[in-house]
Image (cartoon, rainbow, N blue to C red; front, side, top):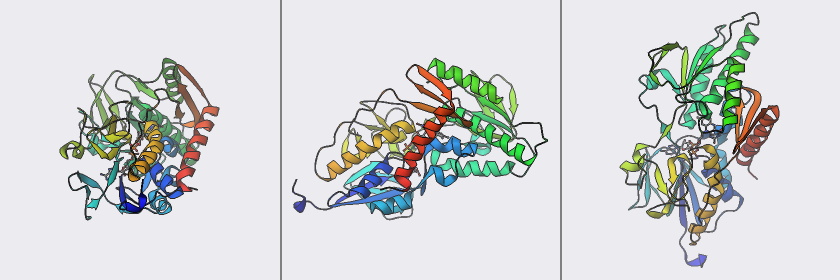
Length: 385
Ligand SMILES: Cc1cc2nc3c(=O)[nH]c(=O)nc-3n(C[C@H](O)[C@H](O)[C@H](O)COP(=O)(O)OP(=O)(O)OC[C@H]3O[C@@H](n4cnc5c(N)ncnc54)[C@H](O)[C@@H]3O)c2cc1C
């Protein structure tokens, strides 16, 4: 490729999600010739989801589990635009951003995560802490935490959602509040009451042994588990279930599924039946080689995988490589995500379940392993070199 005769290429990243931070780092370490990089992001502090349960439990501070995108963009030599993309004008090749001029691109990559899917739960928006999108979680948790700080009250909490996030958050919140109460009022015997309402069953997509370990961990922590009943309504002080019963709740945390942002489909991007952006194995849109989409907002139609941080992270290096290639005029390469992966689920205290394939085990060693992996990940982006 004759770089001397090519015009400078404008590569624009929308969203500082788990995959795009790899692009910023790669560009900072080894800038691509004749390329300008721009990041458009709604939030400056990008959370690393794997550490959020540890943040709730009190093992990590806010800055331990958030990537500072201003610093990372600075390291990359990228222009940073703090704003929300609301549309992509693919004819004019520009991104429409709230309160900003349109941002032109030659190549674009979208990694904006998901919006909450609270289904038919009345009152969830008004009365619950809705954990997704993950970028809004930490400030909401801090506000909830402050409500119970400096009181001797042992809160009654309900967590809705039996996936990994709901399971880990239930244990983390229980651990944190019990510890706080013990510190403030050692003679108080009442402990935090936590109920986990798991919809169908807790950790339904994990193997049998992991589910057994999860049940044991909840029981040991004194968390009430309700399975096979849906939540129908959330009020300020209680949660209603489909079987007609209610659970008292000083606070309710909703960690149910993910939905795609409405603007993808409205904007003419190719989307699946459930609204996620459709890409090929190269991570390029099925109808546009100039636009990539990764992380939870996208569905790779050649290799569909669950929406999870693990897969978003895995897409980071191939995304960086493919953007570098197309900016240089070379074709993007196909990427096949793995089918089987290690899951490490923290249990409030510094212990975790490790699961892979049909295998699962539990212990402090699994937490130390998870902590090592997570800290190493954060170091890559907060002190890149
Ligand atoms: C409490 C909790 C714990 C979790 N734990 C795990 C775990 O242990 N392992 C795991 O695999 N998964 C976990 N998950 C799931 C994980 O968080 C998501 O799968 C992951 O965050 C997806 O990454 P992403 O890059 O797609 O999007 P995100 O991490 O959500 O990043 C999207 C970014 O885009 C920005 N953005 C959004 N909209 C716009 C816009 N319009 N314009 C500009 N910028 C925008 C946001 O500010 C955000 O920074 C957890 C989720 C939660 C809630």
